Length: 139
Image 1 (cartoon, helix red, strand yellow):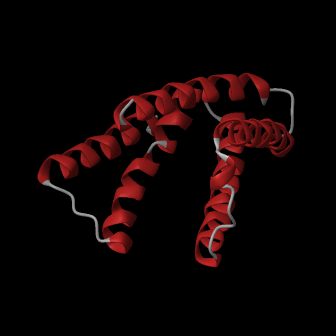
Image 2: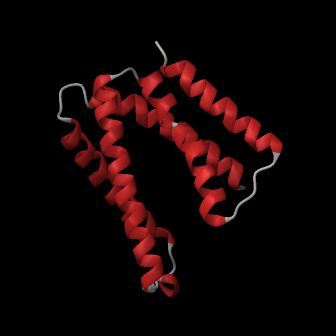
Image 3: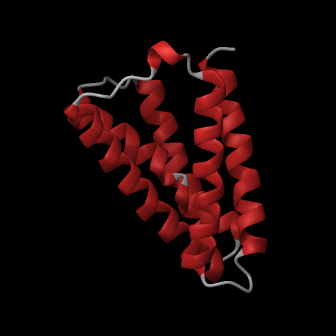
């Protein structure tokens, strides 16, 4: 499978995650709900790694990689915390739409910090994403 198939899978599971989390957070403190979800994700991640990563690939990452993976994990935790609180307070469709502003923010950060380039079509797509999120969020 190429990157596009994996990305579609990610989008599908993310959509399912939003729906399931909305129902799951109804009678639970959002921070506790996030902790339960994260525990399941942690177990799933390690089970997948043990089942699929060859022994020869089990090496300690460099200190630079470790730093950035820890920072990424911290950002994920903060994102999920915000997401669960938003789901507790708002409708799934609107919360998910605003959450997808991460696509535009990631593209902007990739240009600013990684030197990636965006062509006119990509910029137009980002404008549509931002506009769509604004339309979904605006009451």
